[in-house]
Length: 498
Ligand code: AHR
Image 1 (tube, protein in one colour):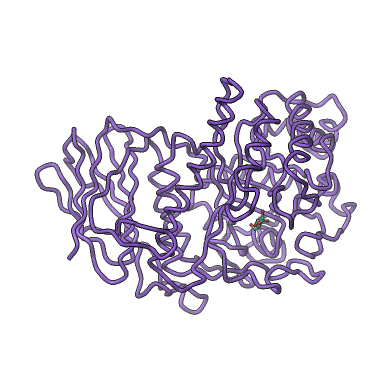
Image 2 (spheres, rainbow, N blue to C red; image 1 turned 180 degrees about the horizontal axis):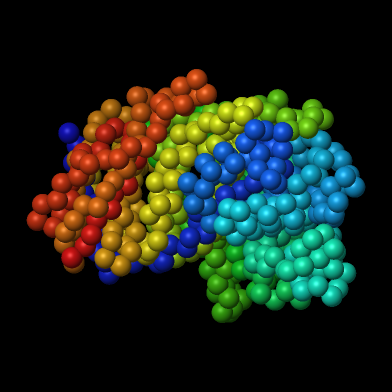
């Protein structure tokens, strides 16, 4: 059996883990909103038409923030269509997903949902077909005290108090040629700067995320970010990154090494931020916002992307398996390891569309990727420690060299959480954990996620093939811990330190 060592030291701190890296993303896409969170005809509907069972499941993920309303959808969305008396709201065509949008959920309903769930609302404005002024008016609607036009409109719609939405995204994937209103970087930068100025003039307490490179394979990767950051300047509190990964080649080990590529993407975009900060002699540090991330590669055929003019069509309904769950854990390890630069991240998405939770009529299914998010999110408070992993390595076909054990760690005063993925396809790993300057004095519990094989998945017929379970096989000896981690597994462990 292979042996690995995770070496930690409480002085080697990367930075506080920002709770906002445990965010989600809800888009008007497919069955995410309608038949997902909102389904007034369901037996599970609450007094506002939201599905109690879906919200109950999502509550377990302890998501901190929710990005809304898109995604590609937002680049053709006009927020005024989604406020006011429901029967007067227009039904419109959504060109991003070729679907019908009845606008029965809009800003106020989203705020009600956030309030029910304890989510911080995070809003993306339309910089595709929308104008900077429309974006600024939305800020007034959400954040200004009653007394002026859009704030009065909110009050008239039944919400006298401002919502206080802190985080706003300046458009979505504006570097992507598929995006409605896509323009070259220099044009987007002008639009974003114009919107940013008047949005912050309306409420100077808001924070802004500029639309960065959404895919490292695009020819404008990093150069787009450089141009945008240079022009938008100190308005850019954050720059966005997106990443969807997949195992198209059917090569599990290489797929599991994709964390190398995620690490690299974070470090490259951060390098651009630092370059611009240095070049412009600015005191302003732009941080990273990974506002869309997940596994997504199967439900990407033309029929998965085209709603064919229907309401709530079945789009992007990815079925997740065990190896996908390990990759989700790998993303989270990478985010925790970059806590000093990565402040926000949003799992894309939350229900029915590339999601941890699925509905079928009144039934609900928990997918494999739900579990690592839940396991990590339960243990997220604290400071990220630098994990040095020594142990056997392998060479991923495209993603390069990786240790079989992928790890991260969070120190919460005298409590230590260790997160470990065993990427080995068929061998358990004995992992020793030590903290150089402190003894581990008590084992406080652990959870394990594994399954019969890499492609095993939950289904409505067999919903419990992949699920987390308590894990007790952790031993303490002379201030160190040792555990035998099954092949293809995610384990989270909590210890008390001396
Ligand atoms: O999350 C699905 C889609 O992926 C989003 O609408 C878009 O931003 C990205 O390309």
